[in-house]
Amino acid sequence: MPQIKKSKLRTEIEALLEEKGLVLEEKVSVMNLESKEAHYFDDYHEAMEFLKGKKGRWYITTPGLRSLKDRR
Image (cartoon, rainbow, N blue to C red; front, side, top):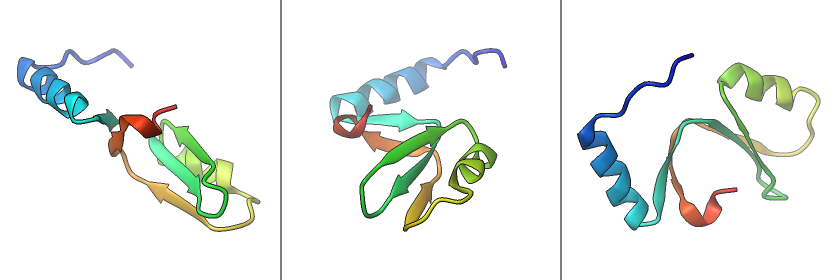
């Protein structure tokens, strides 16, 4: 899939968010609520495939904002 060029406004907003310690996360996150283990996927289907057969309490997040200190 070709990379979409960001508008000047979007670039400015992302820079402001980064100054505040936030970044836009474009991936689907899957987190284990007990161990705090986290995995990131390009789409929901990949996340669901990963969760097949997993035990424990897992949480799926949609793309959105994430703190820079959590970025891996």
